[in-house]
Amino acid sequence: MQRGIPFMQLRGGSSKGLYFDAADLPRDVEQRDQVLVAALGRDPRQIDGLGGAHPLTSKVAIISPSQRADCDVDYLFVQVVVGENRVDTTPNCGNILAGVGPFAIESGMVQAGKSTTTVRVYMLNSGNRCVLEIQTPGGRVEYAGDARIDGVPGTAAPVICNYLDIAGSACGALLPTGNALDMIDGIAVTCIDNGMPVVVLRAEDLGKTGAESCEDLMADDDFRCRLEAIRLKAGPLMQLGDVTDKVVPKMSLVSPPLGGGTINTRTFIPHTCHAAIGVLGAVSVATACIQPGSIAEPMAQVAAGNPKIMSVEHPSGEFSVELVLDRDGAVQSAGLLRTARLLCRGELYV
Image (tube, rainbow, N blue to C red; front, top):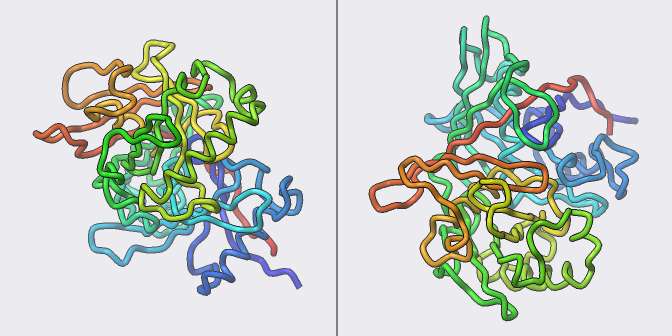
């Protein structure tokens, strides 16, 4: 017999996922993961599940009241790997995080304020915190608004995300190799983790301009094989071990800005070219732009002042990141604007 499980589906940022109360899922991790694979779909088309046959629409958030005094909810992100019957809980996901606040309020875990509601989130994947500000006029989540983010049609109410203490989220250090610049297979790279492990490479070093479409990059098999070879060697150097079956590190080709931004990017997650760029991936790339000696620093157009507004260009637009620096020039916090929308709620059956 099938089993019904309460859920909500939300668009968070430029991703879409299923959101669960942890109490409604099996406590056993292996059993829980199999339930999630079944819920999203096991085959590449995810025809027998609610996934959209793409990494950006095959995501899960598991949320529970926090055990910490400084947070309201705990959030575990789960990437269901399309067509591979498995999940990866190594990385965070900042887009799906944008929906955690609305879910926490809609589910009754957090009581809504009369105008805005602050939701303090503990990210279980990395052990870091993020403070979300949600619009709640009249004590209800407001989804309509004038905020616009690239990669999502229309406008919506803003969700302000302030990330705290995210350096070394998965790798243990901002520069996990100890260097701002490393050589892998004869290619200069910057391995960085400010919320998301990313390998930053110059597009021109791999024979690209950085202006290619995702379709053109995906059609170049020799290029993708070369990129994956670098990723596999970067994994152990970044203290991530064997990354063959992991979705990190992300690979981000960078080039001088094309549209007046700070830097231009083409990002792989890890084998598929992203139509935009992930939230925390954008934070890591933006941080690389101000890191002395990095691949990105010489080509990045960074304005003076503090905080610094960094416009990270990507195939479908740009992503603005606000970096607040301490006295030593290190990133103290990262602020981002996202949007979210509740799509449906009810029971799914596995």
